[in-house]
Amino acid sequence: MNKRILVVDDEEMIRKILKINLNRQGYEVVEAEDGVMALERIGKEKIDLIICDINMPNKDGWEVVKEVKGNPETSNIPIILLTARTEDADMFKGYELGANYYIPKPFTQDQLLYGIKLMFDEVNWG
Image 1 (cartoon, one colour):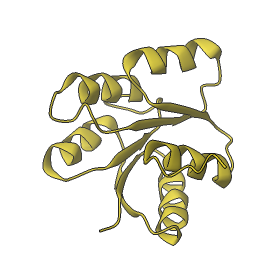
Image 2 (cartoon, one colour):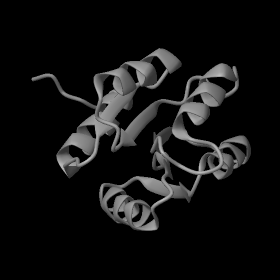
Image 3 (cartoon, rainbow, N blue to C red):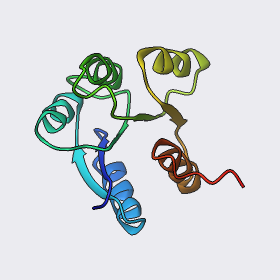
C-alpha cells in the first residue's frame, strides 16, 4: 500500500502541484485547506505523513503541530512544515512544537522529496 500524505495549505494551487508531483512518486495524497479540516481528516483517516503550511485561516500550522503531537493517537505521524516563514525563530519554534522537518518556501521538488524520504527512513546514506 502506498504511503498516504496529507497536504495542508490554504493555497489551492500549492496543494494541486504537490498532489501531482507526489502522486508521480507513488504517494497517495489527501488535501486540507486549513488546520481545522486537517485535524478532521487526521481523526478519520490513516495518515502516514503531514506536509503543513503555517500561515492559514482558522487553525494555523503551529496549532496543527501542537494538536497532532499532543495527542498520543497521532503523535507518531511525522510533520514537515512547508512555509514562507524563513526566520530562524520560526524554524526553531516549529521544531520545539514537535515538527520533524522544516522546509522554507520557495523550495525545490528535490528538497521536498528528500524530506519525505527522510521521514519514511528511505534515505540511502551511501
